Picture (cartoon, rainbow, N blue to C red):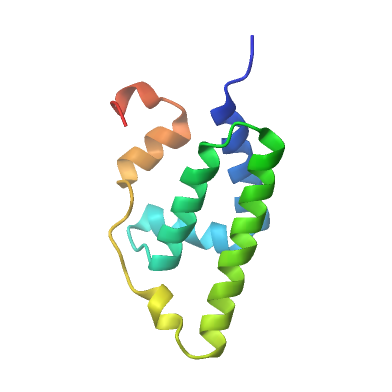
Length: 112
């Protein structure tokens, strides 16, 4: 039985959460409902990576994307424009949807 590609993405996300403060903070914001524009950019990166079929390319895209976003945020912080990234936004999904995704029970979410 083959492992679905989505599990590889989930594993890469877990590794990023464990190792990267930016992603860890973004997921913490999403679960609390206090997302920022930087969090939204990270979410889009994860959605984009989910569409990449080649696993190695997916990993490189995630690593490069997170590095790029972190560098942009650090630069904005240095020049005093960090408020652009800290502006609050509506979470991309609800807390209940996040719990469903993390549990692996996607049948209850409906069609995306």
